[in-house]
Image 1 (cartoon, rainbow, N blue to C red):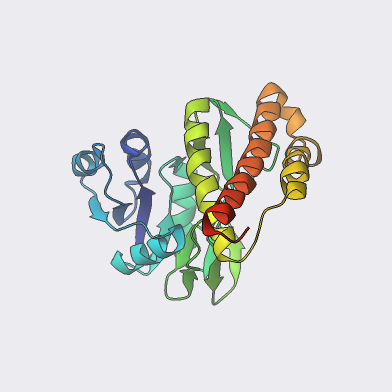
Image 2: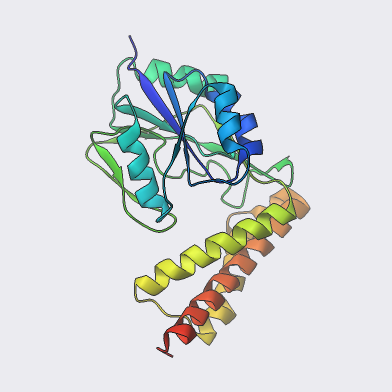
Length: 253
């Protein structure tokens, strides 16, 4: 028999995404939505699907995820973000794998979409993030503010089944996420003692663009690939500009 599995979803004001992701994950033995006091109808959506809804104060993504793990019923965990979607093939591979786990954690390939279209280049496939299936007794996240790392006491495997991710449905969503994540990244870098400079703001954005568009072959996704690479360059510039602003406000520059 496969191990029982808890599945958690991180969400903040993501009611619409929850309406789409929750129907795809109800195969799990336990589903928990970890919220940070959303002001939309996130709680009502969770009630509609009969899943557990828990509010935890946001103090960084790493800490939030570790706090989420402490709430779960089972030791084997699946992590799905609100803009991701499970697939029947993924669910079946989870059950098959957990009948006799060979590793302490597993990476999962993600197929991204950008402005409604699947993108296959520019680092968008397989786009592994942290392991998304793991034994929480052997795994924890680092307490990073954003883009959190992890520590795993055991080997790590790779799934074949793909899950879908829809992080950028519109330019408005892209810009909103860019504002939040550049703020968090600037804060993380500032706290780590890193500083901005004219050279970083001048050269890092075009280098970021070239990485996505040329070296990771984003050009093969046409206009979608070009805009995606350009937005990455813009993200890089804003991140360093916000880091410079933090330096100004701290009186250290």
